[in-house]
Length: 283
Image 1 (tube, rainbow, N blue to C red):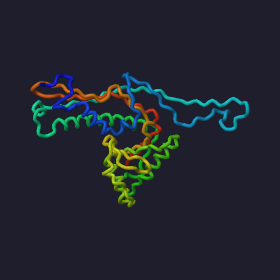
Image 2: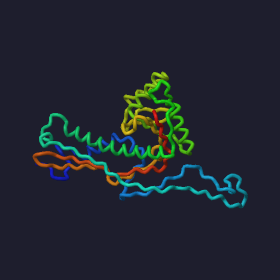
Image 3: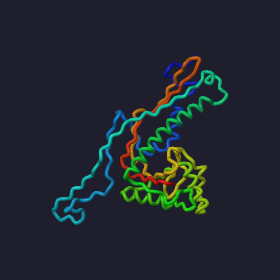
């Protein structure tokens, strides 16, 4: 008996769970943001000023006299508005393939649609991150491209770390985001230029893109990162991802002809602490 509209099973597969499972394994940038739910198309948020709080002259924090009034310190925020974005795609599986395919057409189709949605969401997260770093926030050019014989990733990443620390952030859990091409350049630098031994990175490729550690940072690799750039940021501190609707999949049969598998997610990105992010250009 054919499935009816809204049912999720093709040949005994729970399509929604499979697509969601694939995507959750491959998200790299989205998990770096604080993930929570939303019920509004427009969300207002506030970016907190990162500078240390100081007393306004003539008040001081140090050396307050006995019985004197304490200095008043004021935290400041800048109001921002953000809007939901729908990430959506669909794939079609012929009725015959669903009944008798010799190759894993269904599984491959589910995997590819999951990857398409995942990459669209991660791309949007990355775009928001870079927009704020290059807009009068923390960014700088690499000393030389990391494929160059004069490359110095240690200096470049150290500059990024120092800049974030200079904004009073603890970088204990910070990460380095790079493109696969940049990762290859970094490995080459460590093994050939510096003669350093690297952990068995190929066996350490894990869920959500982690491949190794460098300068005390977890290195995450994603094709959502532009080839010429690298990002150092503090996960959960840098911003939010508010989800209006989690990744959802529906299977729509057209009896005797095809199944349409439609998948979508609706969410928005808020960069609340842009100075917990540093963008390195020209890597």
